[in-house]
Length: 442
Ligand code: S3P
Image (cartoon, rainbow, N blue to C red; front, side):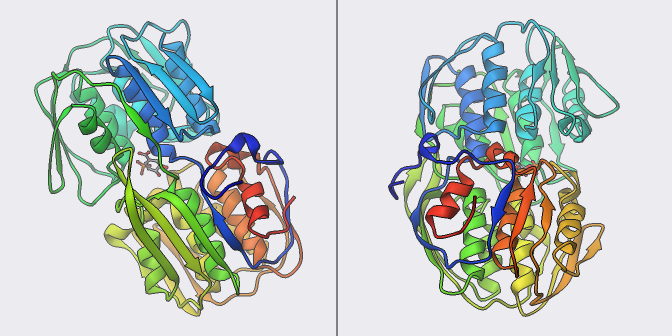
């Protein structure tokens, strides 16, 4: 793969369901990572609502985003795919779907679509896999009901059923720091009477605000208050989606902890609401540099340069947590290699991701000999801890499977990760990318 392009269709082999890794490294080279998952979901959904034809490059062709794409097609929107990473979205009015929409494992897909479906003049049902059916939805249905939405759920879980109802704008203080919830409310606000304001307690990811503004929506951001004033039509998009920082995170951690490694990642989104991991790694003594070189899809974009370094333990809590919420499984591996104690607090949300990421990571790493103390809202451990190779389970959670792969690289003896096909939910070509950087993976 050339360092200036990411073409998952050329990534061979296809991510296997069992990843076999020998300990090793060093990791060396320059690469890109696949397109940002959060922006890829939004590009389809917002492009579908715009008037005109949106052209998107750098789109993430992964399990989660494909689920959103298929759902939008079922709503009567034509989406052409001239290449795996290119979309042409013909925006327009949605048509009533003939059956329930299946978002498979995509939490972002179901929660953002919930905001949009609440405002449609026809009934619809949003559903997903068994995994998605275990993810809490009251956090979106409750504010949507306050806006007047007519929505029912299976006791606060999918499937979600919407009947047409007029919406009115509300002011809503987010009880959980969630960009998916913020986005669902703002999207419903596009169909509401009067302005909608969401109040956040910390800096949650802001892709919805950036993209909707770029498309001409009237949006005011004032500190933690985001107000959407409905009425303006959305203009079609022309954008290149940058690489996903959350995918880069696995390579950043692996390079940091494998002696003699040096990796450069090009064209990665460096949106500051997403890069909390780098701040924390810097406090641990890591050698990671971010250079903003341009802009793509409304995000600052640039290069990340990583060299291996000795790490020390750190305390993580407060506002940093939301800026690295998807990175904690990978971060746990960095903490295990660091000298001294690491404590994570205020990260209760990890328990309601694709899996309970505190319990699942601690449980799998124990199979490798790790000692990790779980707390309701985080964990504590002392390092450095030696790990031994083991047979591990990815639990159908892409970020778990990839984090365990990184753990396997610093273990003594080979490991295998079963149920690893899920890495393609966000990082198609993960194994091939690692192999290209020097890892013995098959
Ligand atoms: C996302 C928001 C976060 C994140 C998820 C993607 C988004 O979820 O964990 O991977 O695209 O808005 P929450 O909003 O539940 O924190």
